[in-house]
Amino acid sequence: MPLNRILVADDEESMRWVLSKALKRKGFNVDLANDGRQALAMIQENSYDLAILDIKMPGISGLDLLDRVRELKSDLLVVIMTAEASMKNAVEAMKRGAYDYITKPFDLDVIDAIIEKVERAREIAGQVTLLKHELKDRYQVEKNIIGNSPAMREVYKTIGKVAASDVTILIQGESGTGKELVARAIHYNSGRLGKPFVAINCAAIPRDLLESELFGSEKGAYTGASERKQGKFEQAHQGTIFLDEIGDMPLDLQAKILRVLQEQEVTRIGGTQNISVDVRIVAATNQGLMEKVRSKEFREDLYYRLNVVPINLVPLRERREDIPDLVRYFLERTSTEMDVSSKRISDDGMASLASHSWPGNVRELENAIKRAVILSNDPMLTAADFEGLLPAGGTSVAVTQETSLEALVDMKLRACLTGIEKLDKGNIHTMVLEQVERPLLRYILEKTRWNQVKAADILGINRNTLRKKIHELGIELKRD
Image 1: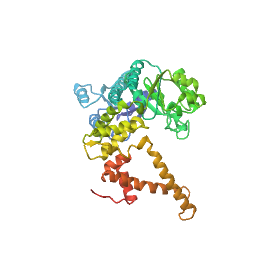
Image 2: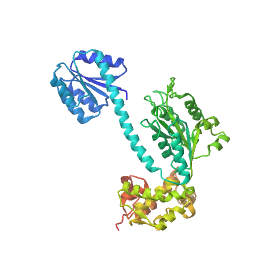
Image 3: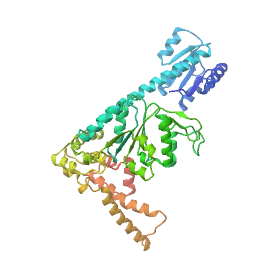
Image 4: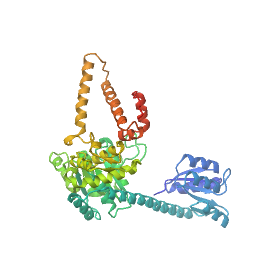
């Protein structure tokens, strides 16, 4: 991790000037303090990568300031300067947590050596931290991919065959089938373990922002670009970039992705410099990309560059034998995450889940289990606990909701058009929300026995937000 901003604190103006000039010449941003109190205030207000402090300064000594730094910014590396080359000063500085110390007078070569040493230490520390996160994520990912069906066994085999190489992968499957989990498993079993895994959903970011997210931008490249910004490809250097829902990417950006694959370099928006990047690309889509190629919505050359090794994730309805293992896994994980008593599932409950078509795949199953665990007060979940969560015949819940919503909107429109209610510009949106939100919140509160923590979790909102809405909508709370 390269250094950027350095603080130099010394009561000698000549020393501050020499160090500032030498460090700025090497491209660092340097702030200067002429005593300990000023240095402390600057450390409290700003973020520094390194502080070079004189051991004797008015107000607060360098050693006392070092103590405060350890309390305030424990990750800030500190180098102590001393004019007294005594063992006592050296031992005391290191004992209090200094990274190093130097004795005045010194050559600027000493500072260069210190800077190189600090940058190397920061790089190693960054790699260790990243590796810890990567290993933790790897453990979680490999636990999260559940299933022993023939379809899943084929996926595991493919992951094992391709992980060690750098071939480009295209993962295809419906929403909720676990495409990102597979992408992470490929990364964590590859030689790029310990390097970044960067994921971006191409469908979730507006078109005018997606390019800068992917390739970065220079300062002043567009309105609001107040500083240089690294793109996802630069962030993923030496690691893996996961391009989710790539089928929704605009054609002009597809051409730029193709260039990255061919040239292994990117150019920031507003920039002229080509930046080399070493990344492995894993792409994913829930659409038929070949159909999009035929309709000229997706570049044929990019399709074939991405589809070097395809991995197809079958929907959950086609691997129902995995449902019992998934149910047991989600029951255990939900109980742990929600800090509730562990629950089991009855035979009729399991049969109910196994017979459902799961249009939302594994993600829908997980959500159904989570809601049932939270709502049920019994240690055993039965088919009754999933009534209402699993529409008959696998019909999407949204259909029933949409039908009721259309009826509500029609009623409001008739009232407005006949003059019974006033329709201001955009006001129907507020009116419909008020009609829908109050019964929704009341229903969930009733089902959770008026437990606001559980209700907020199910609704996916903050507890304070729920409390505010209860007050605004005039919902009367009950206690069982």
